[in-house]
Length: 303
Image (tube, rainbow, N blue to C red; front, top):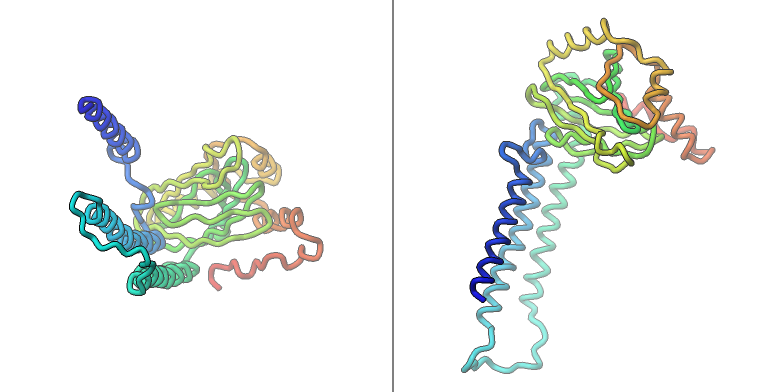
């Protein structure tokens, strides 16, 4: 019996170590726990606060559980008083209801404060840039209104500069996510969502669609490359000079279901992003809602 128990415990331990190794990898980092910008840092701090507050409840409860099981176990010579009429304790009721209420209030205040702070640029002493993002089946289109260029399945941004991502979809709903720079935001047909992100230093950051969208969902990955402002400007100029134009015909091909390689374009049809919103908005809105369904003026990054 003892040999069987030891073998079972050894197998469970080995399985736990194997799962931990698979989850962590040799040099792999948890991307959410590696904040590389002010937005991601605020969200990381909120995760830490939530974990600490949860631990403040869970750890004492587990300690009390083991203590009560041990202290009040039935044993020979037990002389504990028999009190069948006992049914409550006001002090205990206040403790186990009051502490969670206080914790929820603290977490709620900090969550609301952090959430509202993320609707503004992370820093105010640097001029932000805007990137318009359209999710397709199964690829990502990035448009740069200021530089008049576009890319597919990759984006480059200047390090240390706030970036306002304006998000929509020309197919089914998806979710735009760059874990090391901040939380995710949905892309929805007929709507324009906004997400502020910023990379503190040059680097390459993993991005992905985080909403299941069918067969090619697993391939909806992209890279966000942050580089110094001068290098970013040089990259934009190079794209402008050497890449082909994104015509309406090319865009129509991109909207078809299928995978795509990284691409760059020196120009794109005027108001392509806004027209995509209007066209898809007409599909899902009632006739009386088609006008005024979204306020594009609110999407101006300098307002």
